[in-house]
Image (cartoon, rainbow, N blue to C red; front, side, top):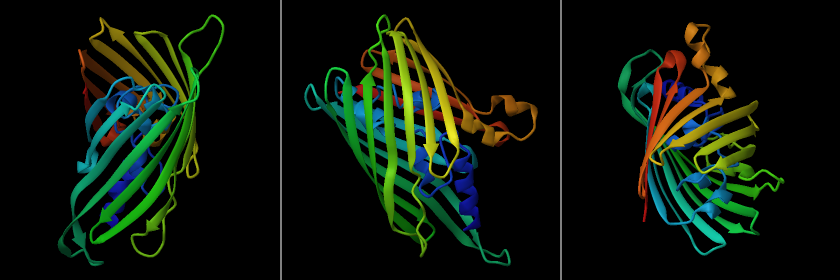
Length: 303
């Protein structure tokens, strides 16, 4: 069990994580948003954008699917799969699954004698829908079913997400949007053993600015019930409609500092993407200071 706690602590050091139960759902599952520092409440447009704010699924214009993979330190792996589509001009729906696997670890008794191995894994199924109230405002709601397994123990939980997105009407300025979201509001139906863990509830507000089709800027402020106030920001720019460059920062990166020269990279996120017709491949690189490197890949396509 000690080894499992160490692995979960490493996960919580990720720029998009905290310290409550089911903390893995705070890790950004998509390369684009992760490269923007995790800022996606006010502006996001991918097949899995509802993960950050369920109102975003209302912005989907065509059916799209996405497959994602993230490689972390300590043998931690994340996988994700999502699909979103418009139901009509005012409604949209999205379905996504995220899976975390920490591989196998040694099981020992109090004296340190090895007793074989055990595994740690988590999964989350998210179903979200949205409704466009007007040309300027969209609201969304989502439900999550969560599962966790450590050795022979397992846990189950249910959670809800709610959000809204509005186009901010300012004379002389176009492309400005704002969003709010309440995420992971739920209850651990079955505890690993006897004591239930608190859910990683968080409230977020964000701004997105798209002054032209080739440039996006995002800024989020997040407050979790179990963590301090966090700020995330990102920028992306498209080159010739085929290549996009991204960079971001999250204040949660201060958790990675160790007093060394590499601390300057704590909280920095970078990435790029390639688009060809209805296909898009995104990559994100996050330097985790002394812990190593984290990498994400996402591939999406129109259907």
